[in-house]
Length: 186
Image (tube, rainbow, N blue to C red):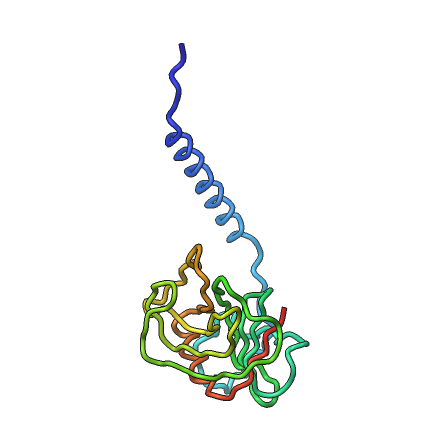
């Protein structure tokens, strides 16, 4: 007669094996080649400054279908935002974590903004709220969690918050004043 393992033991064993496999893959990936940005090297007479992180050295271009001029670009597929100035230069780009309700691709305008902390529809304390769309009765807005976290969208709730890190939230807040165009692409 064989003893049967309880289901929690199987789940614990499988979870531990999965975590170990991910850790091994992460170590292997870290040992691989790391591309260097193709930015020009400073001349000898240039003042010393901190070296930018590779992700900040050459920001990825805004999607071609995002229009022209000063604007905020939000890519649904890439889950990324670009802050683009009037000369079409990308000033900053960063990843975002969307809520459960997404705006349709198209052109919008920043409307109301709320800087003071408040509670989001998912119960998380948020700040730097920049509203720009209404979809299925849900306000769509950029914001960051007050504690800097990026919680997953609340299951079973319709949430229109597009979350980002605290520093990205502050940058978007400073850039996206009322009336700023927002272009949502697929």
